[in-house]
Image (cartoon, rainbow, N blue to C red):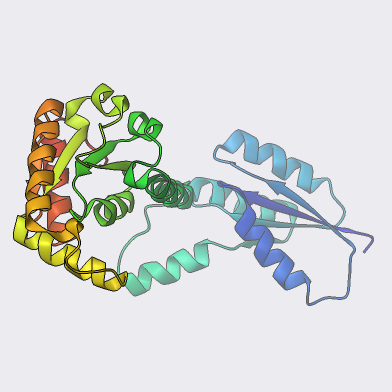
Length: 273
């Protein structure tokens, strides 16, 4: 044998077939092979052209990861007719899983690609939430799917991260008495803004714990009831200017608040399915 021509045929990228092939061929002391990878093969005409090319090779092996049964049958018929060795990497596993799960495979190409896209979309949403947390860059408000506003310690950041895991790009803005909100916040459609509030008592308790964790005085103005009441009053005025709905997060878990957020968005015709 001069050189083995290996054809990898896939309805996706063909990476799986190539990884398995390289893992196997590494067990042999040889470099006399050439890999030809054919991606996104989903119709008979393209497949027939590849198989005809393979049939003209002296030494050839056809490896394939195809879910379409018609294409698999075509390769099987080709292998018998031309007496060319072929290897189906996917069907035996599908059949084994079908028997074990007592369920039939949907045999739809590109499913793993769809899963990858969902994963990268979630990663992008998480990176967005980190980048535009705490009003770091007002330009992010205009790119966000949702903007959360509220005083300090109303769960804006954890809620942003939780929603990011649902592929929602969330920015958040702390409302502080001494600081006028950036103009960008008033340029967003009000249906994409949600205000968060909390009870004064709850905020007082949370802020005192926060100060203690930072090694600061617990009687700081940050945690005083009078300061908190002033902040809540100011935040309420800003939220009314924005015309956004307000969710009271007192005694709510993040999951419950997130459900409330998604329900509000759904009522406004915003869906992330």
